[in-house]
Image (cartoon, rainbow over all chains, first blue to last red; front, side, top):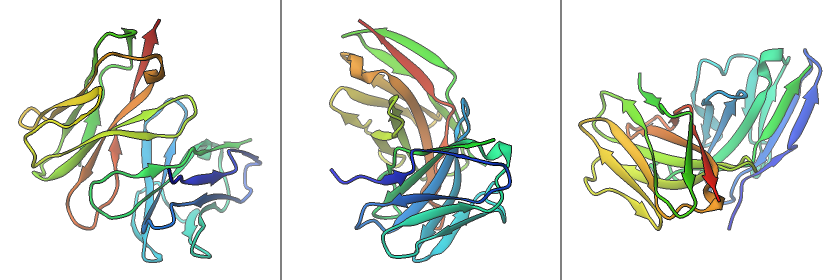
Length: 114
Length: 116
C-alpha cells in the first residue's frame, strides 16, 4: 500500500537553528499538509498546499515557517529559527482530492529543540 | 469556529468485548465530514472510518462502526470483538465540506487499552 514517508524520524536541534523536515507524499496525490502534535496535546493543523502554493494556514504557521515542494516529489517544512515551544511531533499528510476521503499520514518527525 | 471534544482520555476493554468511544463536535455548518483515526505506538495515524454528514446511514468498516447523531452533534465509534491490535490512541476529526478549506480539527484523543 502506498505510504507517506517522513525523514528524519527524530531530530534534535539547538534553539535558534533552522530545521527542515522532509516528506515524500504519495505520488498521485495533489494536496499536502503539515500538522503538529505537542506531547500530550491535540493534533493541530499548520498548513495545506496545493498547486505549488499554500491554500490555507493556521495562526501557528507564522513567518518562522515555510513549506516547499522543490522537486515534484518532496514536500518540506522549514522552521527558520527554532524555539523550545516548537518541540513536537510533526506529521505530513497527503490526499488525492480535496474532498472528504481522508488523508494518508506519515509516521511523523519528532523534533526536539534544546 | 468548530470544535471537537473527546471526553474520555482513556478507556479499557477486555479482548473480544465491545467498546464505544465518544466524540461530540460543535459547528454551525450543515455539510461536513467526520473521521476516526487510530494512532498506534508506531505513531502513524491511520484512517479507521469516515462519515459524510449528509448521509443518514451510519458508516461501518468490518468491526468498526459509528453512531452518527447529527442533531446531537455526536459521532461515537464502536469497536466490536476488540483485539489486542486495537490498542492505540483514537482521534475524532472534523472537516468542513466548504470549498477552500481542507484542514481537519482534531479532538484530544482517547487512549484505548485492550486487556487480554
